[in-house]
Image 1 (cartoon, protein in one colour):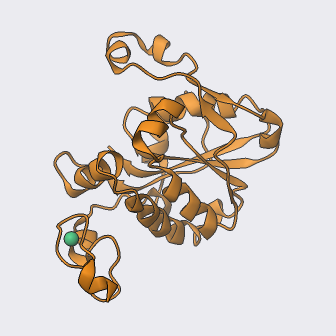
Image 2: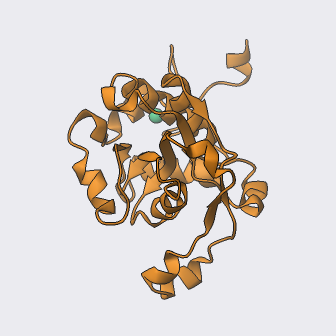
Length: 220
Ligand SMILES: [Zn+2]
């Protein structure tokens, strides 16, 4: 009955979803270019952070291509209220990571936070569903109360200033003792230059006994 009144449609192509399809139809799902570093050597991802931050594991579910389906979906997730894509990608990657030995000792999943003004405007952090589903799959906790964003980054300023400026702390850790001896999985939507993840990682790794891995929906 609900399906007749509110037919479920694919967020990628707007076709009707059939059978057990959720969020994306099978053909859109098959059209996505997978990155999945956890299934092979993840050095290609880690290389972005060589000499910047030490990582245990690093993986992305999707390979970002300009004007591709991944770009469309990430845009809808961030700007068109398609929040459920977040959990969809998280459940997908979580199922994968639950079978990878090096992800079994993760102690908590922490999302890259939004500034509270941005959070109020968008109404949700686009990484929340993703992180929660991964935490569930790895039987660990999801903590969005440890890492906070202190100030907004002004994109105009960011483009013009040097890397040194970008490295000034935008994020901070609320209770660093909670990170002691923990293996953290930091999650975000997309990694491009890695500046955001590096910024977060620098704060989390102020705790000297903490180990860090990262997982993103996509890599550019
Ligand atoms: Zn579709």
